[in-house]
Length: 329
Image (spheres, helix red, strand yellow):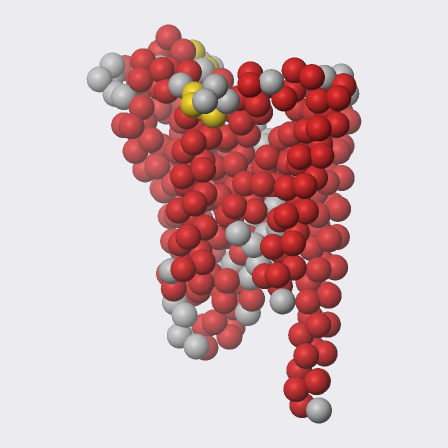
């Protein structure tokens, strides 16, 4: 029942996304030009890849707030190494980012899965630790496109069919792989079982520690690689990179149909949520809306998504209860 409800929700989100783009295009026709579409996908790529990364964690009733500081730290370290070692190319950058992010994920995973500490508190702590470390090692030094690998700058400028940036092509590939894994692999389905009922999952022999730990490592690795996406998008970095953007990612995931109650949602739903959130932000900017109201609308969308999530969960529980009553009668 839950899966059906959320499939409908993802379809509804896609319809809302198209509607939002259409309404904005009426007032600002440039919004749906090839260049406008490319800007939207470029703008969304970082949030979308992060939403894929934290999707398994949220499905398992956890959260990872450290992703924003991991993006900033990874981006700065990659830029610094690229400036020092000119032989580094963009693929080396992805590996470096994944390694740095995995270290953060390992710490989060050990504390949450091993010591069973609340993920909200743990990842809030690592968010500040990594951000503080970023400030210390950066020493107010920033980098721009001139210090970045030439292969990264070329990749950032690459697009397909005039509208699809290379970064978002990577997002699509990653989304397909993650969705396939979560649906068809046993270890992926285990995460839904854990999110639906953690004690029961433990009782039936699902390795809860391993699945939880690896999900945090995965989230950290993706956040580290997202540092490369950030550099490709903005071509510059300092200690404040991606500051305070973790809630935008959480909003995208929840709006995309992943229940904070656990056990429900898909990586592709998270990407649709990211597209919707970022489309609304760009649409408001195109319509000249003040930055304060853009943030306020983001918050309102998150609250609405949480209310919808709770109502859908309650509706599903009632339907399941009625079905069991009918079976007994």
